[in-house]
Amino acid sequence: MNVQTRNNVHVTGSGPATMVFSHGFGCDQSMWRFLAPVFAKRYRTVLYDLVGSGLSDLAAYDWEKYNALKGYADDVLEIIDEFAEGPVIFVGHSVSAMIGMLADIAAPDRFAAHIMIGPSPCYINDTGYFGGFSRSDIESLLETLESNYLGWSSTMAPAIMGAPGQPELGTELTNSFCRTDPEIAKQFARVTFTSDNRADLAKLQTDTLILQCSDDLIAPVQVGEYMHRTLPNSVLQVIDNVGHCPHLSEPDASINAMNAFLGTLCCDACVV
Image (cartoon, rainbow, N blue to C red):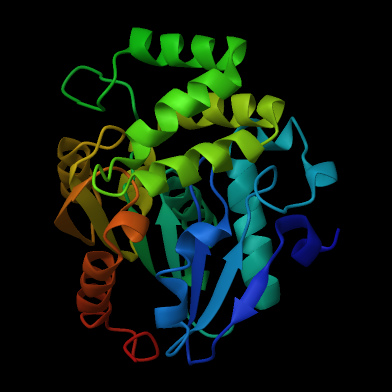
């Protein structure tokens, strides 16, 4: 299997450490266009599409493999093996934050830090835990997606993006959702919204920035606070932003938070 073709991998920049960017549900690597060029001045940067998204090789989509986040985490390790140089800083948006965490737990020697943008270990409310959605909310969401994916996309994408002052970003996300193969999107949505990785958080020993928005429909601040309490070596930074994609709607605030975190790392190669 050609990993570069499978995941549409692009490498730019140079530096003593590698920053790997991994997008969220319904997106592709173009969502990093405001952040990646900034960090490519100091790091080797690796961008890729999750299999089934963007310009990845759809023929590589394995329904059994990708029926759990572990399948995507396995891909991350293969991408790192082939394209990373030096310590790896993994930047994961939304579900990719958990994908990166699972990859780290499987091979902790490969990661120097994680930057989790809008992460959630579990979207469903539970006793003593607020994930933002009831189980019936998630079941209804998935039923609607199953019966009318394009209609669901046109309604949900702008709500997920937020950014009320930048409606073009909501349109962009809608179009991105609509470009995704509906059957693959349905499976990935089910895997994303029904996964529960709360028990895995305590296993992650790597330094982690949790970058949360002050008003996020998908990952409320309470989720970030829970993760900060549970992750052994984490920093929580809440930025003033409406929506789930601050790397698009508030790139400067996101970059500032990332730089502040990177400046605290013990890894000399990462602090450049």
